[in-house]
Length: 382
Figure 1 (cartoon, rainbow, N blue to C red):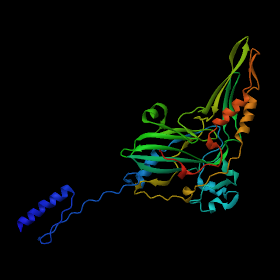
Figure 2 (figure 1 turned 60 degrees about the horizontal axis):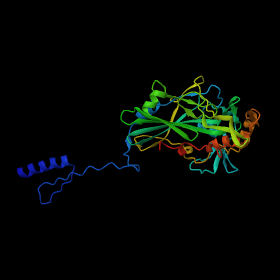
Figure 3 (figure 1 turned 90 degrees about the vertical axis):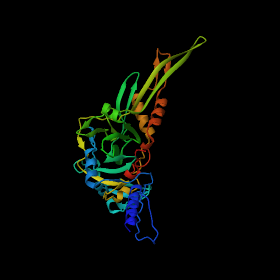
Figure 4 (figure 1 turned 180 degrees about the vertical axis):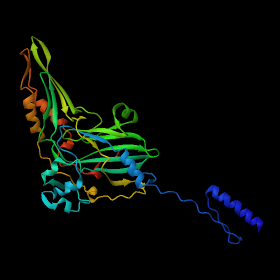
């Protein structure tokens, strides 16, 4: 009997150390079976769920929330979704369905849109604004996506520099104006020490990713918070102040004449420019950590999130933009580009038509069509 017990103890230790399963015939005096430790199920992207408490996650979110400098000449401030829904109606195509706050927005399709009915909402309210956050765990990293909601966007503007004169901040009004603007950045952290690895900053459908080295060289931090800048009227996010030109263009005009049997060409006129995204540090310092609202998490366990129905709304947050870009650009070009430009009275060009077509071709496609979609439609890092 003692030998059997000793043998079973030894086998038990072997089972514990090898994490395997041993079973014994029922004819033995004692029966021992240690179950194999189950594997943690994997999520669809081969990531095990990351475990963190609500308190710890909220602290990490708050500590890494950006400081946003709003442009000193921008009259359209951040707001919050609840107030916006109170001030808008819901439409399906051209049919009004009622006040947006009284509708179930969950899973409504792209054929729906919102339209402002109370114009007081247009200016926003920074004191009541919220920063909406969703968090994802993937590849040993924590991705925190910070959303800023602006009830209204103002008109865009354009720089045009010519051989004769520079024209700064040429208004494209009403082109660029729209309702219900969602802007966002993503902060990527190590999941063990929560140090920032990279930051992804979004502007007009494009993005800039800054590594640790690039952040050190180009960004500033305010007590650990990344500092970014919101562009005038358009609210695109940048890591530095300045005009931040996008959709840049340049074109050169040559004129040729025949002198005797030889063709002689001269450079007559040059035009360069781009869309302005003016940012400065003289406006309001907007601390986005003050009113955080966590709206969604992915691949994280132990977190209680009350996701609002509007998060799943797949429609537009503003009505269609019907402004004809070519007509607006035509007006700008007519007042900045000469109808005819000559050198020595011989070499002449008419630059207007070509400049108009060039500028129109540079306008981002996202500036056309319906108003912006909401957070669920915004891309993650990938």
